Length: 109
Image (cartoon, rainbow, N blue to C red):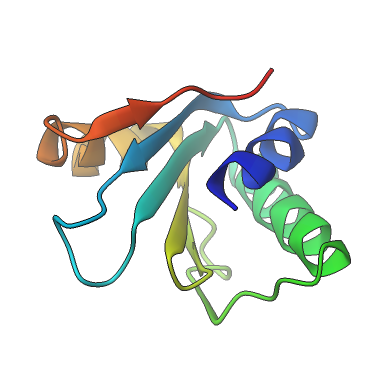
């Protein structure tokens, strides 16, 4: 699922897309998909595009948070959690640093 999300994000021009394998390190997800948008409108468009692509594939987000402010939108697909950040919010929260020891999954082209 994490690698299926990547093309939907790249179609909307996601910046800095990363897939982190956190299986066995946390009990809430196996993979985190991180990306940035350059504006709040792009962050919202990224989240909408991912949600639509996954719905087309028969997957619905269990929960979506942060849509109104569009600085950090979280889409919870169960074993995959997607974080769509405004660039400055991403650097402030530094999830990559928090999970620096997690394996990086190659992003499909």
